[in-house]
Image 1 (tube, rainbow, N blue to C red):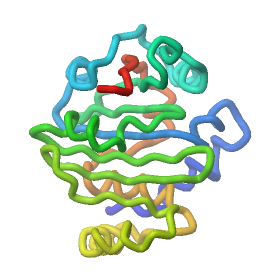
Image 2 (cartoon, one colour):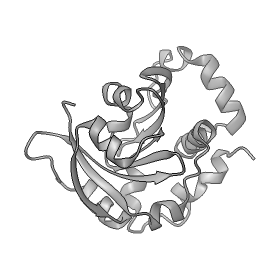
Image 3 (spheres, helix red, strand yellow):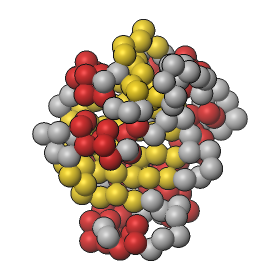
Image 4 (cartoon, rainbow, N blue to C red):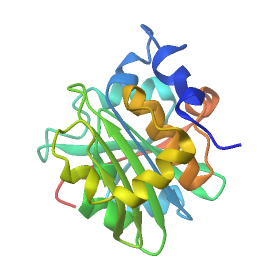
Length: 202
């Protein structure tokens, strides 16, 4: 069965409201890269390896200044393998939707990433071997961000019953449609993340 936005209502309207996960729900970047190990993600991003963390610790570090005072804004993230995919979780981050970094991560494979910040800005990026297949910024009024990818977006949006009023949930459903990876509360909460911090210049 193909996931829809309704299948991800738990992320914004369920168990994560007004609790220790609020910071993640309000500002995150989730990225899936096929065929990479956590070690390969660290290598491709030029990241410094950090000790493993659980989700609560990861969120706390992500909203702090971890790794950032030395070189301006750096990208802090955690990685966990899910089947044949590397799942990258960035609390308060955006590395996965940066075309340069995403291009390196997607070399020879597929990358799907989506992002939300505290100001409500959102991005969705699908790349194949360094080439954009779909890039959306639906929080912007610029119609070009939709029309450039009209056919690609329309096909996926039809399958997942895209709901513009619940775009974060819709993006999670789109990511599942393109990767086969279902993000669940259990996946987020029960994983131990291999962590890293990558320089923003990478």
